[in-house]
Amino acid sequence: MTGDAKFYGVSASPPCNKIRTYLYHTKIPFTFEIGMNKPNSDYKKMPVFEAAGRQVNDSYIIIKNLIPACMPEATFDAAFEEQMAFSLQLSLESIMSRDEIGNWAWSSPHGFGIPGCVRCCMEGTVESTVRGNILKAADKDVNPHTADKVKLLKEPEVIALLKPLAESMLASESKFFDGAAPGQKDLSVYGTIVGFLYMKIESTERVVKESGLEAWVATMKEVVPMEKLFPAEGFTAGQKIVY
Image (cartoon, rainbow, N blue to C red; front, side, top):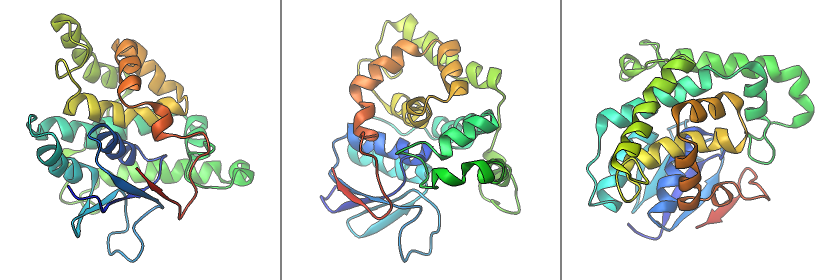
């Protein structure tokens, strides 16, 4: 992995946070270019990762390539990552209340860059956009290649998805889902939920508590500290941060 790696995204985005979790943990030098997409790219979504002149789009595909390149001892678990990308992330967004969506979008200084002064008149629009995007993910006309993989879960079902990980970890007396050291399961779950926890989204906090993951989250905060992903000074659009 060369030192000219660049990552494009924002700190409010769960898939962006998941990739940043991997990059920080594996100590890959990279430049974080803050913005909703990569300038002058035909790909209009995020995240985007660029290394050695190659652009890789979509968090699932990025992780599929990162793991063999930077975690050679690990084997990429495609089925698990599909659960993260097409179920856990979207479900956590889906179960948020309108107020929680507002707190997420306008979280300062790590939201989506929407001015706080317009929250009162735009909160309904933002909620509709978020919920509309979730539905689009499962729409075969919009996402013909991945719509069949989307599975939206209600809060009890999200807990049921995560609870076996906590139970397995407890049974094996391990600190992490993948054993003595963090692996794909640890980094992908933590990376998906860390932004919601930083922003104190209560529905995500309930999921963590009811899943029995509070102690694990505390351990993961030592591995990938929140202040590294969400520095107090925040980020601004167009800013470039070298890691």
